[in-house]
Image 1 (cartoon, rainbow, N blue to C red):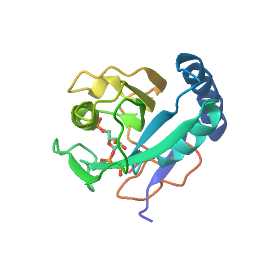
Image 2 (cartoon, rainbow, N blue to C red; image 1 turned 60 degrees about the horizontal axis):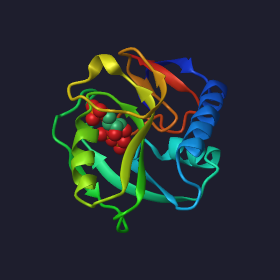
Image 3 (cartoon, protein in one colour; image 1 turned 135 degrees about the vertical axis):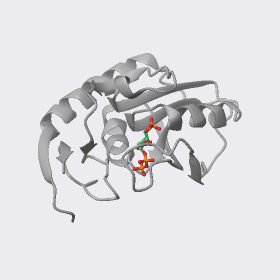
Amino acid sequence: MPAASLRVFLSAAQIRTRIEEMGKQITADYPAGTPLYLVGILKGSVVFLSDLARAIKLPVRFEFIGLSSYGKDKTTSGEVQLTKDLGTSVEGADILIVEDIVDSGVTLTYLLQVLKQRKPRSIQIATLLDKPDRRQRPIDVAYVGFQIPNEFVVGYGLDYAEDYRNLPDICILEP
Ligand code: PRP
C-alpha cells in the first residue's frame, strides 16, 4: 500500500442508510412483474451493486460491463475502453445502470450510446456518488446517493491505482 492519509468522508453506516432509501425508491418506481436488469460497471460499482440489489424488493438480474478510462491516473483519459461486454441480450428489458461515481460523465455517455443500440425498454442510472462540479458531458441521473465536492475519494469499491476498494467507508485520499 502506498503511504497516504485517509479521512472518513461517508461512513459505512451513512452509506447503508442512504442505500436503503434508494432501494425503496427504485422498488416503488418499477413494475414488480418483470426483472430489472442491474448493469454494474466494473470494477468500482461491485460493492454498491451488491448492497443496492438487496435493498430492492423486486426481481433483479445482475449483468456487468467492463469500462475503464482512468488507468492509474486521477483524471479521465477521455477515452473509454470496453474491457468486458454484457453476457446476455437486454432487448425489451428495463435497465438500471449501477455506478459508484459520476465524475466527468464520459463513461456514462459512452455506455448509454452502447446500450441504446441493444433496444432495451428503458434505461436509467443509479449512482452512489455524484460530483456535479466535474461534469464535462450532461448526464441525466435518476438516483443519486450523495452529491460530493471535488475531492478524490476511495473505498466502498472506489480505488486509487487499484488499492482501497475494500474499505467499508468512503474516504478522502490525501497525499
Ligand atoms: C471510474 C468509476 C466510473 C468512472 C466515472 O471508473 O467507477 O465508472 O470512473 O468517471 P467519469 O464520469 O469521469 O467517466 P474507472 O475508469 O476508474 O474504473 P474502475 O471502476 O475499474 O475503478
